[in-house]
Image 1 (tube, rainbow, N blue to C red):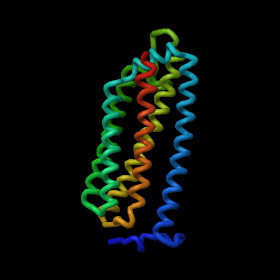
Image 2: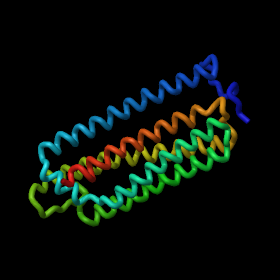
Image 3: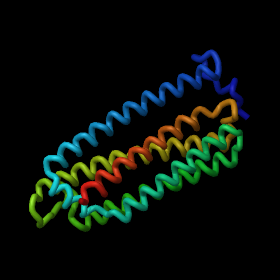
Image 4: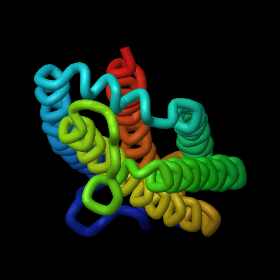
Length: 214
């Protein structure tokens, strides 16, 4: 079994220094992610204020049931991720692998549902550039909404995919006894990333599917 001493990288004096550096690094990274999505949300807010009627009409064309289901899926995955981190903290290897595996499965379910939603958007001719047809008024502004919709949700889906890859890697490491109560930092920082992905969706869901429907 890998222990805390063996897990210490050569550039660190001890496990505590390594843990502190890892936590600082992940929080700086998460801050940059927040800034990135903040720009996207600001762009959406500005255009919605400018074209409120068109954005409301466009939002009503989105698939609320599928988006709502995906919200439940991601919230559940946040719980399973937290349980995986908790198991790693207490040296429960099997439980850790179990919860991380379930988190990966839920992340895959999210992407599968999103793929179905994208397919329905395509069949309804709501994909800008590729196939967009809208017979109502302000068609250009409605198309602008869907440019933002696909970009924001697409970038978020990419983050989910990256998270799935990271959690899968951590789960494999956990199955090989790579972590212990003295060393579980990779599980912890991966969990923080996954929680951010979930929190970002909690902003994406209302602004694209709920607020603009009014």
